[in-house]
Image 1 (cartoon, rainbow, N blue to C red):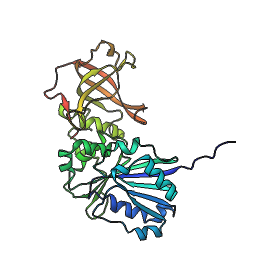
Image 2: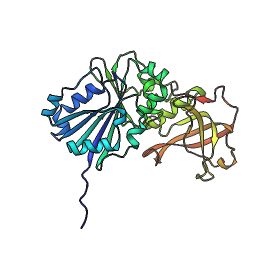
Image 3: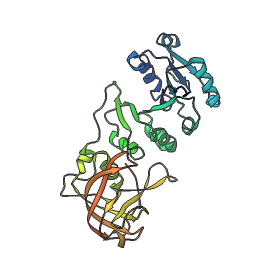
Length: 320
């Protein structure tokens, strides 16, 4: 006899530091019956914020709150909660200071499936936290499906913030909510770029490579079919044929300990004659093709000219 199929229980994870807006968002979401559909929902709260939940009001909507400490985030405790409530959906308001790996590595009850991860950022404190707790900040939004900046002001560096997120998480949807509750228009505009995308040949300065690298992936309509010129280091991935190499740069995505080589595939008939770690000037046309690791189309280059050159003044690039 075939075993009974386990029903999928969707799990939504909300991340962010204290005062990042998690609780407010969760309250608004949960009390909107169109979201939960009246399903029995278990809300796991991993920290006490300034905003509090009205448990009686939530119960009226078939939503049950459990507060848990870090040492309670175990398979056994979650199984106990599953048996106690038998929820049809689960929401987790995660503590911003806990290691994120814990929630993804733990063996959750059968059927529990993380379907969406949202990260909330208080725009008023983002630069402060980013400067002093960069690795912790990056961990929070690197796995997010959506990143929400709230309490934004018109003068905030939203384009720069957007690039800092996209540098480590290309797939994340980024939303800027202004202090009055309105949603800001997309900040990814040509005016924010330090190079002219309408020039016959887009000339990317050494210090602007990181900005171009993110933008080329994020705004294909801006670059498809355009010519570009930049300086990069040669790299030959082992699985690439002789006519392809990757011109790229070492970039700091988080901190000094987290430097990665970033670049796009480049078709070039003379690629086999290039040596790894050589510096080259590349003039190429930008196109797009499917990348498995992107889960979609990403930039590719078709080189017209590749010339040996010297290293830039600063070999490591940044995304701001």
